[in-house]
Image (tube, rainbow, N blue to C red; front, top):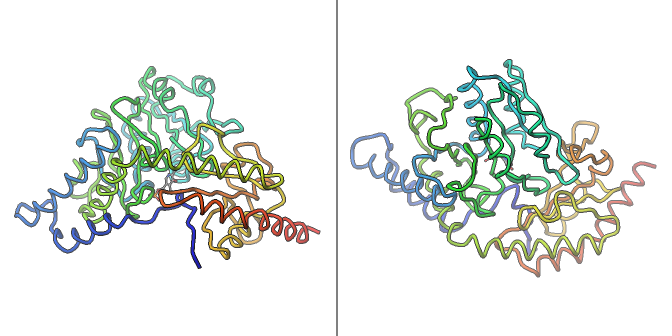
Length: 386
Ligand code: PLP
């Protein structure tokens, strides 16, 4: 069966040139970058080359890139590290209700450790309001963390305005940009963000490799204590093959980002238009315009999202829902509930996230089966509730 992958917000396939660079690094540059001899120096050269490649993708200085094991670690390092480093100034922190768990659970940990956390609500499209942010800021606020693009609903937040507001009050601004780096142009030399998380596996690189951008002069408390690698921000011998893969993926996407965005915008608009027009009671979730290119998320009331995903898989289409199934009950995702959707509506979520290899034919193929599968899922759900 010809399989069509439409789940690029979960992860992306590794680009063949990335695999080749990683294999070469594994075979030929296995030295420890901290060693003084030439074998170590070769590993160190690759490390610094990758730093340049990542910095190039986001308009940063090479000295501002700290390699991590991925987006989750970058988020934790930014949030917990910044809260601890600035606690002498205050212990109040601000985030939003639609963040990824890598952010929300880091804040939960801080709340248990004596910090006060304000969680901003979002509107129906998943955006925070700048007014409510203004009202939440206090004398003792030290950190604002608001994601750039939401993984479930694709909505983009007004990061420039948030950053400007944060800086007016000398507050550090972190943004989880795991979904947006490599998917939309980001230029940190012209964006008021102090800390930014990214992850290689969202832009055709390997899993387990990511980075935290730390604007020059911003201080955090390190979370790992050891050999002092990454200028003491992140101790531990560097994962050279993973970092090489991250660097190569960054270089490749930098060169093709413009056309990538156009391609994803075209396909995404077509997919959204067709689903909303051709399937009864199909609603787009997230912002209709301010959203990630190629990200299409919906709710179909009366459908159970997980079973729809299973039916789609049987037809050769990889997609995702947003519901978490616990032992004996279904609960909708925290993001969809934050939009104000009722649990029974939010349970019928479907996320289709497109990538560079998707085509019009893929959408054509999907639309041949999706309307029927939604109808079938509705029937099953209504029978199960009877
Ligand atoms: N933040 C967001 C918005 C994400 O979508 C993800 C992964 O899906 C993460 C953080 C975690 O990144 P990683 O899988 O690299 O740990």
